[in-house]
Image (cartoon, rainbow, N blue to C red; front, side):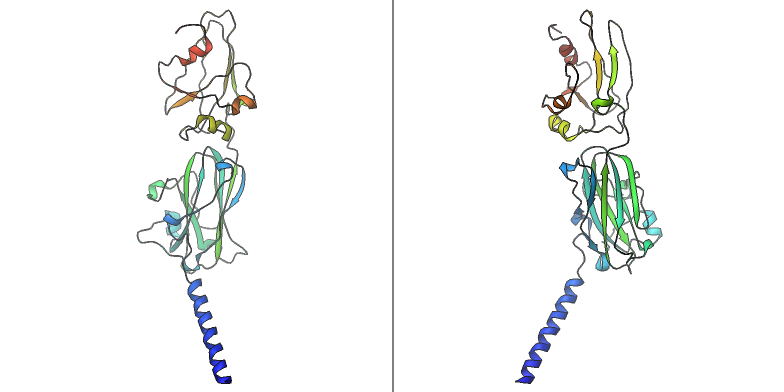
Length: 288
């Protein structure tokens, strides 16, 4: 009886050991681009703060057939195996991407990352986001004016790298953009039977979540604010807006704008060449 009991226990221990080794040897869930782990930025992507990914054990990660990394990673031999993350921002943000680990278990130069600006895994080296510089080591890459879109993070390591690593996204307000919020709007002042001209650059402009709800179209993800005063005795009230790229929408508020007006669901009107909708709002009693 003692012998049988001993053999039974030995069988159970061997089976447990085998099961543990087989499970540990599996590649991480985000081993390829199609299974990239999403780093969710709260507030539908509009919130500021630090957002941490799940951890990836790269000990048994692989490199997919035909998979390439940036020249920086390839040159340093940091593309033997890879794991993937992705994140989305709905408007312009100051974004930093940090590749990190615990207690330097993986040598500093045994890992690195590059980032693709793509909507899915149909990517190539030409899609590497130049505003987020590739790194061939642990560290941070960032940009103060990163525009709306999906970003895929490809982390590459040397074959002998073992252990866990993860990514931290830091999202903050973008680099200062004039006229981007009501508090910094451009004031044309009083326009009385004369013309005023001003050019604007919207490269780093953004929208807030309240504005986005009113726009209801993710293709419109930047906004600028202007103010103009037309005296009651004006003969002509007119505003011409010329734009060199993309599509634009507008909405007009009488009197000073405040938080309630920005959050209102007053619809935006698409701006087109020859559109006289703005004149109608400035002169509601005139048949144009």
